[in-house]
Length: 98
Image (cartoon, rainbow, N blue to C red; front, side, top):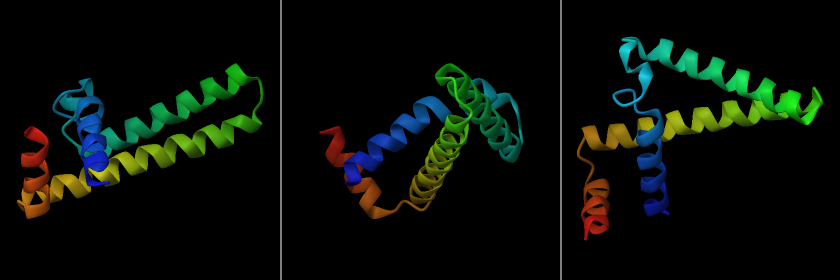
């Protein structure tokens, strides 16, 4: 389970890491989160229009926001663990590098 969470964190860094994506030029992390939320709403509208029903908009919007919040939550947990040099994260990274 921890390996899956670590892979999810690495995937997050690949896509959402503010030092790698185009939003890195915005200094305020709250503004970055706001822009990501707006993008998720726009994608939800696009999927709802594609499927041809406004009913799917609510479902798609909720799914996108939940996914986005979970990515940020996962990132925050792992960032905090790396910042504090948590032992289980260090051991997991060493085991995965072998």
